[in-house]
Image 1 (cartoon, rainbow, N blue to C red):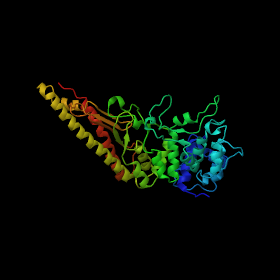
Image 2 (cartoon, helix red, strand yellow):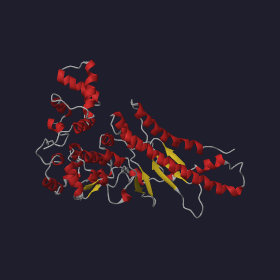
Image 3 (tube, one colour):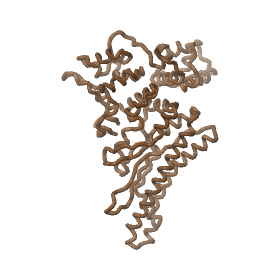
Image 4 (cartoon, rainbow, N blue to C red):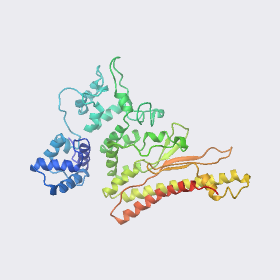
Length: 427
């Protein structure tokens, strides 16, 4: 038995479109018109495109007459659409990665995982693993079963495995499997594949939200990305990327998060500490994709958008206050350092401030801010911090909301002004 939810159906259709042969809602709409009416009237395309958009965003129900056409075009069953992917049947009676991933029988799951031939470990003829199929089917119960039994994990116990680059693998949290390899001569790929796919964690996080399993969000380190464990305020360890990791799974997660309850959103807009794997220190961050979530909330005219824009602005101002205090401390240290040289014309206020800001760095494309005190005494340790701030890239037709957006972005842009100050040269 399953429940019918307008928003969840919309999200599911959006996910299906992302992986379908259709490149856009417009292309899907044109094909819909062709199938339903036998031809395409160009004047009707904007209307069907808008209706599909409304369905995807959970604003309108999909109509009865739409269901068989949507199902046919997306190559799924009507039941799959109505249940938002929580109820679908496999197309083959043979036990395969696909059939088990669609099963709701724990005994069948356990038997398959413990097969001597270890089919669980490898992709099938479509180059898909059992995790691929389970994520596509939204079989949250099965995925959680695998995690609870510690057959797979998206986040490992050893923080040393949290990495931005781990050998030949991509960024990840030490994901893996405990299922042992087959005899020599066979090629097991699941463990390597999991390490290489932190992106799958975002898909699992989307399913956790869909299933209202908020404890799972904590288990999956939902607010974090591996990069946060391998950066600190020293320039050598500053983030070098021009943009945050991007993928369809990440985009779908931020879209789903944008329509969550205020309680869930508050979790992602609260700061959190991360223990660095490269130095014995903690750094405090906010969800790196918070701006992307706000963009979606503004586009959808979510009622709580203003509340979380204000929360983001408050966070930015808090970091600005922390930065100003650190700069003042650095200026004082520089004055103490250069005072014995007795050259006030050379080491003037402009020079001292530029020197104090020498190790200040701001990365506007990703929002990371790093500062290290330029001078320090033999008795004090090197002081500094690294964190991130939030901005949005969309506008609102609501004047009051746009005022809040402008205020947020001003609090973001001010961090650029300190970059200009550090470039001042003394005469």
